[in-house]
Length: 215
Image (tube, rainbow, N blue to C red):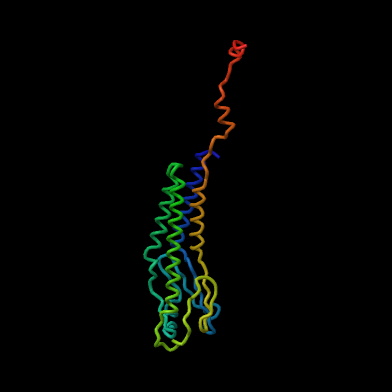
């Protein structure tokens, strides 16, 4: 593969990664489902968390939470900066792919690592908030005797009468694809001349007349 084709391949990786990151700002990153005897099947309570917002049965959950003393924040702290971080990562990835080969790899590596770090910080904040929800509770509610708990970030857990299941949304998989594409673009190698090719070019050609004269 020629160097120009490799460059086009790297740019294509970066553009697709940017599209994935843009899509991740519009699609849910995380799902929460709560089931209980009175909330089964289609009646189960659901929450969808996006990069910049969340929706679902938030009003119903807020009413229920008054009985066990927990408080779900209306706005998540990471929603204030995560969409901007994802779009910035998309733009920087495309710009890095346009740089000369000698600096392109380093720029793409730095961009993908910075993007992964931002996502890691958002996950850390989310897990801390989930811990606070189940441990920093109002002691004067009707069901305050329910033991402290931490809702699952992934998987299933039992809290009082509720079975809580958490899973990644489609946006989270787009984030993973974007980071993989940026890393893939960073490790596309530049074409180098083979040893045989270089040796052939370095050998001088001798004409028949020169050979006879030397003889």
